[in-house]
Amino acid sequence: MKPRNKKLLLILNSLVLMSCNSGANLSNMALQSENGTPSLQFETLEHYDAASQVKLHDCNGIESQFNGNKCLVLKLPVISLSYADMVRLSGDYIGNPDPGRNIGQQADLAQREANFMVNFDAYNNSTYQTYLIKYLTKIRSMDERNKFNKQNQRPLEISDKDNCDFNEISGGLCVGNIPVSLGVYLQLANNSNDHFDNNAIQSYLAGHGLALKTAYAGNLTLAYAYEGFAAHFGSDSFAAGHTRTQKQQIQDRCQNEVEGRKFGGLLVKEAHDFSNKTGITLINNNGKQWVALGDAYFFTSGNAQNKQLLIETLQTGVDQIYDIYQKRALLSATEFSKLSQDNLKIMQGMLPNPDLTRNLTVNPPAIFSLQDGVLWWRDLRYNKNEPVSSCINAASFYHL
Image (cartoon, rainbow, N blue to C red; front, side, top):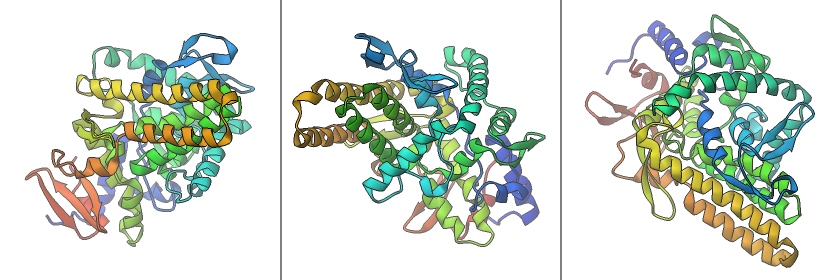
């Protein structure tokens, strides 16, 4: 297919982003990040819903079980947050937007843990705390608006205005529902790779490991808070468009092009949204396979098994924390280390494996993917996978 002309690409890019999320057009891409990545849409009701069904033991010293939305795990000067709040907010709304503070892509575990703590510490930022009340007020109004969709297993709805509201709450500016300067909300969307591919898995495991250490040290409430932060990334991995989409690799590939660098985020958005809508088969290290959709399609009937497996995985993580907390006085440092590693292996076995998932022959190719440095595009007209010479050419193949 012959690529569209440059002017049409500019219009196309703007329309794609308007329909998918924040509506940032190409002329504003430089405001978003160094590599021109457009924002990804956040549907957070699915995070909150799954986390609310998790049972936490001995919440705040009370010997009983609490649902995740009833157990307060982080008390801030402006508000106290539940485990479910942490799963919903962390990484999407609260975190460190510095690209150098990404968690999962760090090769060294110590650096992953250090970056996790930097991101978690964003909750202690007084400016971010002022955003929280407004965030939650807006989020709850969106939840109310989507109540019918949830109850009737329909896709969730989020508008360009919703995204611009979040952008402006967090210090950004929009004109006509198009961002002209980025607040923390869109900076996090642009700069973080922790919600995708193997980075999501490693981000979760880093935080879960810290939660286990904190439980062993005797601070169960803080351990639950760490787990809530980490579980956001773990739950992202159950979304089809997050597990299969190679966000970091595609953006890095496009970054090497003079003009194409501005289109990496567009390709990521298309791959993310299409897989979430149509669904793919996931597989984990235990060999279990199941069908998953994602994000806005979390409550649809086709995602029922995936939803249940996510809840079971989140519950296992919380149970591991409580088990170590109970046994802490009986475990030597060596015994704790072994038990912790065993627990991490169990969690890694339950989480979807992005590499194995991409290699499943039952799954059709992604809309955009990277293999051995070559960018591929799936032509939906003929269901054919073809190599693409550049990111700007790939962007011209986008289907409205």
